[in-house]
Amino acid sequence: MSEKTRYSDEELQEFKEIILQKLEKAQADYELLKSNIMNTDGNDISDTSPTFKVLEEGASTLSKEEAGQLAQRQMKFIQHLKNALIRIENKTYGICRETGKLIPKERLRAVPHATLGIDQKLGKK
Image (cartoon, rainbow, N blue to C red; front, side):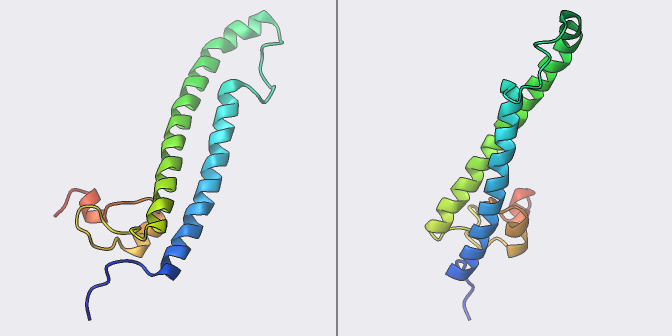
């Protein structure tokens, strides 16, 4: 029996559902971070005493910088998930980009946007 070269349509559908769930959560998290950066939640100190504004300004700036970095990382994660969906449509999902062999299902369930097998990710041969 020859080695399997790609996942079946049923297996791809299972991965697609996992990715869509993660994508939905990632997009919700991104929107939350974005609203935090833009202060769209309305719970800012901008309408309170100037004294409090001075005290909170440093923490607010740091918080916005951190939220901005997290939002960038989240957007990158969302793009990786979208790319994984494209690979599912192309039926190339789950194939290691270095070896051409199938990435184990356990790895794909844990990291559904993976493009490398664990050994390749860790730099092993």
